[in-house]
Image 1 (cartoon, helix red, strand yellow):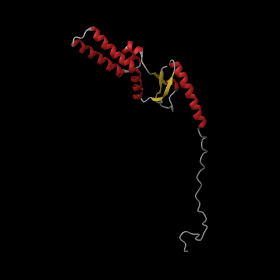
Image 2: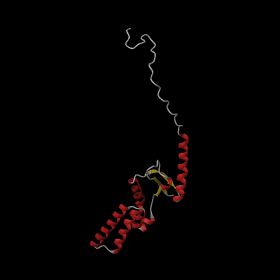
Image 3: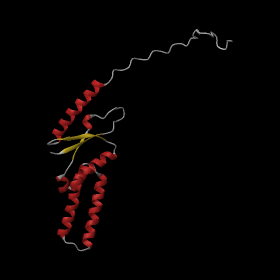
Image 4: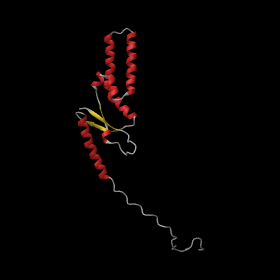
Length: 165
């Protein structure tokens, strides 16, 4: 079963916590679309830096392979290997991007698909939120205003400060 990592964006101005509808679920594992349509997959998830590195690396690799006289089959296999690397590490690329943007990791969830993972995550998340709310101590009563400082009557052997003994 696929494993998903759940991320929450930083709260917007005026928010104390991120809205749950903005959470992102990143599936771990192999991404077939990243293998078949690598540049489009990178652009779909807005992995601009990874796309730039992929484009530059692919162009340089093609130039180097042509210079050394590699055949079309070798060039194709090298392109597939680069796409395979992106397909295997696509989730890591997405996680690094979210971490760079200061998204916080909320946890991991297992599910057949993203909808099942979302359902499981939010069911557990709401239970924990309800438990935290129930376990929170009641608010403290407001503090009493300070009493005016009166000179207390001194009881003892020396009723006045500085008086002889």
